[in-house]
Length: 303
Image 1 (cartoon, one colour):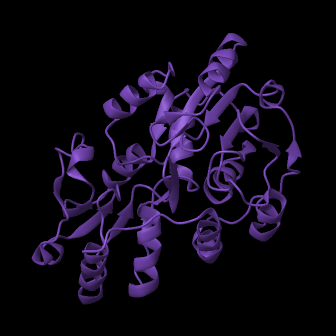
Image 2 (image 1 turned 90 degrees about the vertical axis):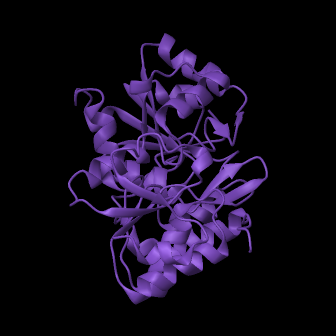
């Protein structure tokens, strides 16, 4: 059984370019002004951080990130995390941030997992097949008729829809079973993490979005994506603050042009691209902006 391998930043960027037509349209172009992060953030009231590649790489905090968040609080700014990390329950996420030295409250962390659960509340009852490593945590799935997909081929035909939440432990064999069952019978596919990749200590891991776009190419299924760059997660983030912060006073900070920057721009936020630790690490930033036609308002090396 073939395990899924990591990809390089260049391969990941090329993959994002190929799926551009499935993402929101570009909402204008920023000027990609270079600067120091705290100077840029001073002009905004609410700072939204992506996690992987901005605050942490895998289970390792990026040096200085916790201190930057503390400095923003000290300056009277409101800070929050908007993450496509859908594989883990909120309690697990909060434990990770505490271990890494961040003091975020639960209400300050908004994930695509939450956006997914909000969306499927409006769906009719279904028996769901779930892409998720059970070790990651089945908490918050108790109210669903949800069954983790493994190597049992018959299980793929027995469900009424699919939730792609976490790709840890996913294999080529399981991906083949998923694609084959959707060819036999089309059913809804909801994607709780639209990211193609995520920065981890060993490189860029393949995330649920990678496999969702692959099955779309091979089956003709149109998955429903919940998370950056799509609007629901940003609407949830603003709702956490009572809708009191106008979009033009919000700064979205991320490492990925096609999720953080595109999504923030679509929501009407200013955007800052972080280049040192995430999906563009080692690539030409200016060339990547030109190729993607997605330009942030600001470019910083790190926060």
